[in-house]
Length: 87
Image (cartoon, rainbow, N blue to C red):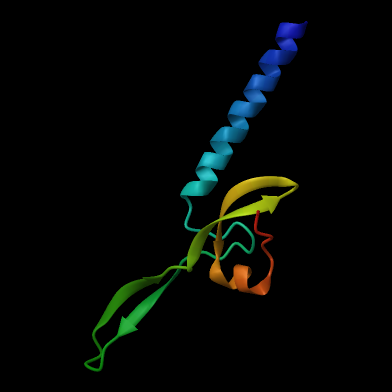
């Protein structure tokens, strides 16, 4: 019985690690969800090309749910005080 409980616990931990690893890869703010925007750049000669505007993300050590954690947040969230930095 005990080994069964430990096996389930290990599976939950591994699933959580996989989801956290997937979240770290995205170019997305973990607080407000700001992501890249896409559009066109148009020159004076009316030449158009595709462009991608990325959010200004910073890696910050913050307190999330009482745990000190490294998160990627945009500069706007840091300035607005949405992120509580860890000491």
